[in-house]
Image (cartoon, rainbow, N blue to C red; front, top):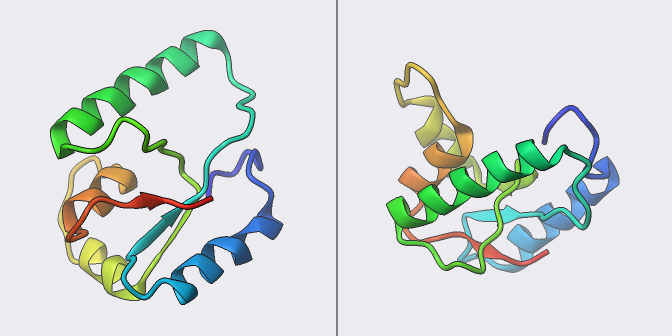
Length: 104
């Protein structure tokens, strides 16, 4: 979760519930209903998301955000990686066996 509180902290339990109720999922991603960023930042986010979708072969309907919960096994894999400039979202995609599913 980012520190700008655009995602309500009280929704963390919803992400955890999704993982608890779907044992086949490794990651649950929350999405923005409304982003409070400048148009230039939104454009940059859009470009990065599209490049990431192509790189990992993800569905165009998948929306990325920094608001997600992941299983401990995925967190441990990420902690064992050595990256100079880590991007957590990309690390999650590289260690999950299948593409994440948007549920919230």
